[in-house]
Length: 153
Image 1 (cartoon, rainbow, N blue to C red):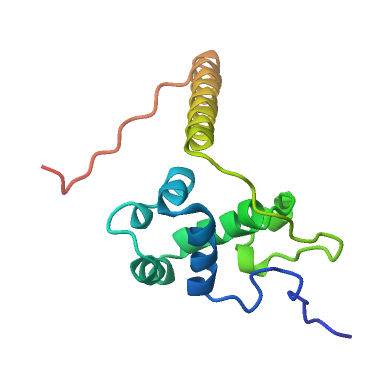
Image 2: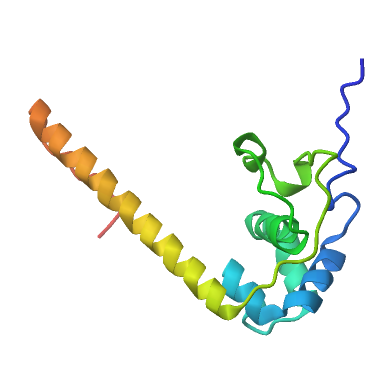
């Protein structure tokens, strides 16, 4: 029985961070990358070498860039929920999914995406507050006490 998983269909298989970054910077440029990913290494003193250095040290940023590479640059269909919980390099891309042409991205599209995310976040927070407070009052619970940090002055 073979327990090894075949990752060879994943476009990230065998691709280094510098090569990946060079491809997407050539396609989109640092300004678009910053607009879509909001990672400061693409805005302040942006260069391939400094960005690679940062991405190698910072797992969350590297995974964000790798996901961008898969789903925006390689234009693959979005990952399933189970796959989306894995880092992009560990995702299994079905054999029938073939990378397509890079998506056309713009600064206006990035602004719209940022607004949609902000609205979704605000709606989530409103629902969370609305569902939490009345339920406690209905059960007769007192509001939670604030935790006091003994070391704070």
